[in-house]
Structures are given as C-alpha cells and as structure tokens.
Length: 389
View 1: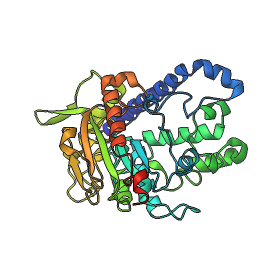
View 2: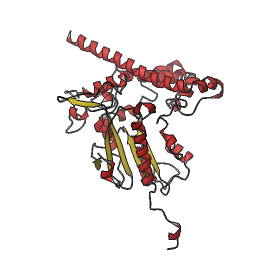
View 3: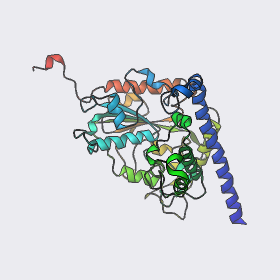
View 4: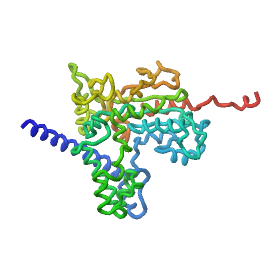
C-alpha cells in the first residue's frame, strides 16, 4: 500500500512537471513565432529568420546596446565574425546559465592549445567573463527531473528527462524541415533523420545504443553536482582575466524555512520549480556528492539553478571570490578574482523578455557594458608618442 502511494505521488509529480515544462516550451516557441509571424509566413518559401528561434533575441535585445556586440556560441563562429581575435585583440564574454561554463571550457581549451591550426592561442584571448545566472557548480534541478543522484550520469527509467530525451530523438528523426529550420538541437551529425536511419535506427536510438544520449557526452551529466566537480577539476581561473557574476535568487526564509519569495513578478511555471528546489533533500541512502554537503546550502534558487552554484566555482576547490554589495567597494576590479552579486530574480529575468525586468534589465546590462569599457585592453595600449621611446 505504501509503495503504491509513493508510486502514485511520483507519477503525479511527473505529470505536473511535464505539463509545466511543455507549457513553458510552448510559451517560448509561441513568443518567438508571434514576434516573427510575418517573416515566418513568408519564409515557408524563402527560408527562416536568423537564430534558432527566428528573430527572437536570447538576450532580450541587450546586444543592440553596443555596435560591437555579437551573440556567439563557438570558437569557429568567434573567428568567423572577429578574425583578428588574438591575445592583442581579446574578447569580453557574457554567458547565461550553462553558457557561462561553456566560456570557461573555451578559455581552458585556448590555454591548452586544443584547436588544430591555432598553435598560438592562450587564455588571455578572453579579457573578461560576465556570468548571468551561470551554472558553475550546477543544480539539484537535474535530480528532480530525472538524473540518478547515485552517479550523476544516468537517467531514471520513468522521469521528465526520459520524456524529453524521447521527444528530442523523435523531433530529429521525423526531420520536419521547417521546424528544424526554426529550431535545431544541433544533432545533425548523428544522422538521426528517418531518411538515413529508418525504423531500426530509431529503435536503437530510443534504447540508448546509438545517438547523442548513448554516452555521457551531453549536457545533463555535466549539470549534476558530480558532473560539475569533474569538470571544475580541469578548469582554471586565470590570473589575467576579469570575472564578474550575477547570481539570481527567487527564495526567502520564513521562520527558518526556505520558500518562494512570492507570486508577484514570477511566472507560475517557474514558481513551481522554485518551490520544488527549495524543498530538495539528497537521498539519505546515497553518498553525498562532496564532503561537507548540506541540503540547506542548496535551497536558495531561481527555479533552474541553485544560488550557491552561480556565484563562482566552489567545488572541488573554491576559487578566489569577493561578494559585492556596492560596486564602489571593489573599484578597480582585480583580475583572477570572481566578483559576484546576488540579485532578486528568476532564471530568465534578464533574457528573452526585456519588459519583465523593466529598469533592472537596463541597469544590469549598462553596468556590464560599462565594466567592459573600463577594461577595454588586455594590455596597456601603446600610444603614438611612445613608439620611439
């Protein structure tokens, strides 16, 4: 009877989580489509808008604040749009969520000269990294959604992540061109299309024998606490790079209990996620992910990431950091130190929909651009009258 009751609760939670995430995905997709409606109707014949969701800006249009801002994701794209990129022409990076950790991996690869044909790369190609809700120590959300807390690598047989995995595989297998032109998961190199793999290819992919989820080389294992520890063990904080992070929080403590900070200003879909994460407890019969782990350290969150994860790299070794209350307290910034602020907001407050954050949106991005301008040079520039001295 008890097992039946627990199973019923788990199925009910899975149903609610599925509805929440499907609704949220539909909201993002429909928002993009609504903004791109005229273009999308014409583009059935003439192609689609720029980006993965038409003309919808991931950063809510913040990139338009400066003419030398590009929204990029890869080393190759960076070189394509900015071919003079090198140690004398470094780049300021701004990353949101897992994107902030991607920049750290990129910088480590630059330090390790990991790119064929580019033997002169160095970590100094990255002048600064600004993180918005960055996933540095990752999130207990992954366990709630279906990652196994025992190892942080495999997925529970019945879970939201299993539904998402199946949905992604079917999306790529059906290979509906107009949909993939509008949003592509980036799995084309696995040749999942029904035209190439057929029914048996789909079966093998669903069984986990082939395809993007057949190994641990995909994002969710890296978003577990264990995954972040494995990743952080190989990523440095570099002494000549400026680091600044904004950690978001949508919780507060009432009589010692962590709860969502209110319904006002937060979407109901994210409210449910904040509530779930604020009540998370690591299974008592499973070894904790690191020595000294405490559930209460991970209860503050923004609906997707835990606030403790967003400030600076902490595990397995804590990197140098400084908590910022007022910007004037830490001027000038010193390289090699993670300066961080904790701001009230959910995980998507500073992206996609500029109107939600109102004035706070402009204040955040204006401060980012101002900080980048103050540290515009990786090296002290040579003035014309200094050339012959």
